[in-house]
Image (cartoon, rainbow, N blue to C red; front, side, top):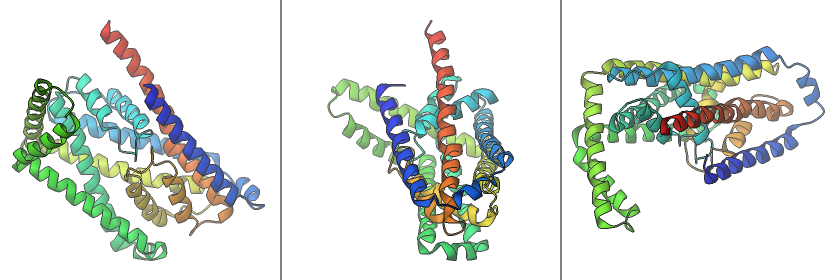
Length: 339
């Protein structure tokens, strides 16, 4: 990792630890020890295994979508790609900063840059569609749980729908009006490259145009001749989010609490949306405070802090450990590639 990335990793972990310590200080009392005696480590282990399963769903999604375009990418290569993505997501604002890593790793697997970009963007489009559908399901079927959480939770669902509509609009423009996308990208590129020499800027713009054309052709290919990749992508996106939501219920069972499956479904959906907002590196602090505030409505205050700590260990600190391991593998591979 570069020095700047290491710095942001320390900031992300440090901020998260600080918030967790404050939460524990405010929630631990004389009843906490009694609750800790009821811990069932089997369910906590299952929570870690369920999280690994979600990463497998993600890897299968990438593998199937790339394969539908004619690019064979191995499952374990895809899984390592996902792990590397997790580390970068932990040090960038929100938890959606790992896209460049996925594009780079697909490119290293002999997927052309435009096609790799199309796959990664299509992943986010599918994530948005699945989240919107889950939000609609939750609002219709789980109305009582929404009422307990209040108006803020409903507002977050509307934000999700706006996000999805935006993704679908960009998706439409990429298919029907790629020239509009080119104009927007040109303006953004010229703003960030205004200190460059004119020849360098021109070369960069031409490359951007080429990649947009490649992306456009790939999207058309997905829609016309690689529908199987989209179907597999949607299926694994759905499995990913459902399994990720159930992790909280497994942790609650491990702490001797009711699983709160319906309530956790709503809460985790809200947190997934909030953690996409680029406020802090890896959503540090935002996730901890949000989870504490929402779960405190359903579980005793004496155990809510412990729950949030374990939840973040599974979904944040475990991700960092997997990402570091993956990065070591990638660095060794790149060293051999240069040789």
